[in-house]
Length: 85
Length: 390
Image 1 (cartoon, chains in turn blue, yellow):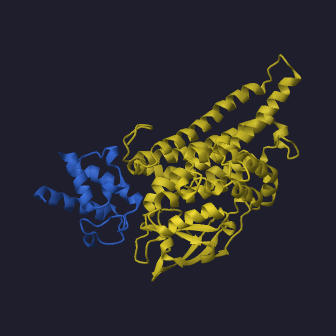
Image 2 (cartoon, chains in turn cyan, orange; image 1 turned 135 degrees about the horizontal axis):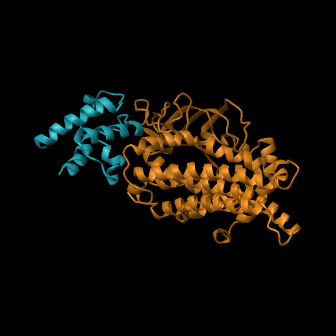
Image 3 (cartoon, helix red, strand yellow; image 1 turned 90 degrees about the vertical axis):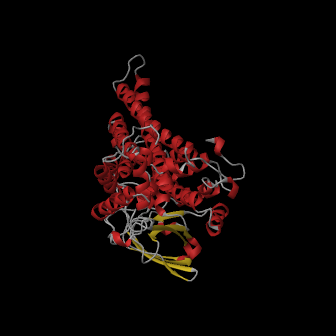
């Protein structure tokens, strides 16, 4: 993982902590853990998407607005990487 | 309709519609289960219409099913809603459960025994969000145990199978849900309320405390989130839309009868109500187009999980439900005005009361407000336009 990606992961974790409304601490969620299994609701996931768009100054195109895109911290980082290129 | 009939069955769809029509007023008046219509659906093989032909079912597309729901809705709205809700559940099993031999066996039983399938998705104290559960599946070896306080189970007392949502395990988050197919013999239902409503009175949808214990193989392995987005919501909204189009058909038929009767009395003079009827036909056409387009869109993408899982599709399929119910309410109100006092009277052939009361159920039994609130969230990130694909 590149340095940039590692920094991205920290920012993603911060957003999940603020907007994810997870019933567990974000620190207890591994990068590849399923966020929906961890308690991310569809309602909260939309707030996470908006916060990510603001934080990373990107817009998720509709084809990325999928459950799979936001299913783990790694998946979010991968999606952001495709947008930031 | 005749193209959908299967020669092996004792009754045709038209026969079932005739039975539903015969008992519709009594079902409505007494708020009783339309037992005759459901028996007729069984005799016509209609309870397995949505099951793939490879399992012995009718192999109907969603478009085919919506057409049957519409035909039934023109006779008895409660029967049509039961047909719609049953197939919403059966499609959830057949589209997401086939990897489980026990679910495949259950689908074969639905074909051979024409089992009626109900659902328990809402839960008391969960705030009406069907995508979260409080109750949980407790696994004990190869058995599951589950207790759910359900505020509504439509035709629960008459169902052979109830599909129940619950958290995957006692340790799971509220959003980590599974679907459990609870068989009648595995179920106890204690009624916790009554069902004496304005419309859809024959759906018999009181609350129940549900206790179930059975084979752990009846817990559908697929995540409920996927079942809900890819099958349950789209099929429910389209099949309800079909049932509601049937209600609209019945109301419009009465309005047309009223106008044509007036026209025959004074040939050469167009009755004033004919203009109102022409306007009504425009709205009726909108309702048909809305539901039919949604059904064919689903059928064209039925195996495309990415399409069905997209926010654009969720927005559009929710819009279909809201549009269809609003149009239905408008249509029945217009038809009543066209029929005038004959529509207002209860002792007239043109009586509109049952359709009027049923029409309002479409916006209330599953709240348009709640659906729009959900869409409001999705609009915060969606960028596309209707029909624009992903």
